[in-house]
Image 1: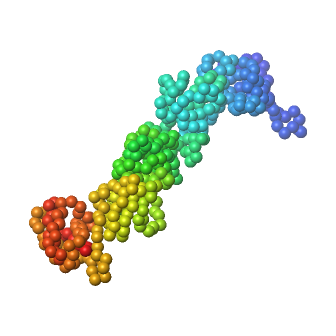
Image 2: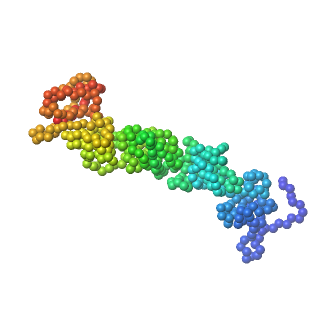
Image 3: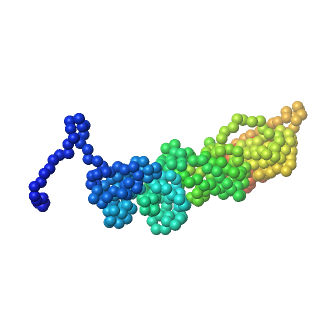
Amino acid sequence: MGIKNTGTLVTAAIRPNNSDDKIASAYAVEIKGGLHSYVTKNDRNSIISERREWGMLCNVYNDGVNNGTYQLVYGKASTNIMDNLNWVKFVGSGSGSGGSAYWIDPVKSVESNEPGSPTDGDRYILGPSPTGTVWGVGSFVEDVVVQYDSTTSTWNITTPMDGMSVRVNDQDNSIYRYEISTTSWVKEKENQLLSVAASSNNGIAYTATDQRVFSYDVDSLYMVQFATANAGGTVTLNINGLGAKTVKQQTDAGLLSFSGKDISTSVKYNLQYDGTYFRLTKPQSDPTLVKYRIQTSETVVVPAYQEYLVYGDLEVNGFLNVDPMGKVVVINGALNINGGTVSNSSNVHLVTLATSVSNVAVRKYSTSLALPNGTPISITHNLNSMSIFTSVYDGLTLVTSNIDISLGSSNDITITNNGTSIASANVVIMG
C-alpha cells in the first residue's frame, strides 16, 4: 500500500475556462515530461530540470536539419538528466538505426570508405573491407548498417537479421534483403537485370565490377559488354572477385565453347549463371550471302558440324575461324590469306571438280557400311574420275582423323579406318 499524502488535499479536473472554450489546455512547454514542442534545438536544450523526465519526447519543428522528434534516454551519454547529449532522435519501435525490425529506413549507398564530413542521420550498408578512423575497427564489418548521430559524433550500428529489407537510394531497383544462410545482402530477385562491362588483357580471362553484385545469382540476367574479342575457345568471367566462371555459348545443340573472335565488342550479350557456367546467348542475324572476301575488320565463324562452301577463290584479309568440327570447302579455287588469319586451316579443303558439260560438272556417290579398325574396305563409286573428294561420318559427326583413302581406278577407292571401329559409317564421295 502506497504512502498517503498528508494535510488538506484539493483536487480538480483540468477544465476549459468557460463554456466557449473547446478544450482544456496544458501547455507543452509548461508540463513535466510528456511531449514538448519547441522551435529550435537550443530551445529544447534549455528545458529546465523541473520539467525534464527520462523518456520524455520533444519535437523541434523549425530548425533545418535539426528538425525531428527527440527522446531523453537514460544513460545514453550519462545519468545526468540535464546532459543534452542524452537526447536521441526518436526512431520508433525498431533498432537503434531506424525503422521496424524487418523493414528499416533507407540507406544512402553501399559504402566501404568512411565519409569525412557526415551529417546527422546519414545511413550506409558497409561494403567489403570497411576503412576509416571509425569504420576500420571493432564491430564495423561488412554488411552491417550504420547511422551517424551528430549529437554524440558517433556511428550507431544495426546488425542485420534474416529477412531484413532496406532500400538503397543511389541505385535503381534497389531493395536489398539480408539472407542469414549466405550472411550477405542480396537484391530482390524479381526483375533483376544487371549491366556490367568486362575487360581482359588476353582475350581469355575477363573481369568486371558492379557494387550491386554480392554473389552469382541464378535468377539474375547479366547484360555484358566485352571490351575485347575473345582469343580462343576458353572464356571466363569474374565479377567483383567472386571467382572466375567459364562462359559457354548457348545453342540449339547445347552449351559449346567459342571459336576465336566469336565475341564481338559491338554487341551487349545476355548471360545467365546456371550454378556452374555463364550461359551466353548470341543474337540472331538475318541470313547473308557467303562472302568470297573476308575484309580486315570482319570475322567469319564456321561452327561445329557446319560447312562454308565457296565456288572460286576465297580471300581472307580478316579472320576465318573454323571450329575443329566445322569445314570450309573451296571448289575450283584457291585460299588466299592476305594478312588475315585462318584457324584450323586443316579443315579447309580445296576441291577441283570437272566443269565440262560432258562430265556433268558435279557428281556424287554415297553409301553406308561398317568400317572396322585396320580392315581395308573397297568401294566402287563409278564416278569415272581420279579427282574426287571423300568425307566419312560417324552418324552426324565428321571423322577427320585416322581415315586413309587409297585411289584404285577412276571408279573405286579403298578406305582403311585406323581408329575406333564404326558400326555404320556414312561415306560421301564427290567427283
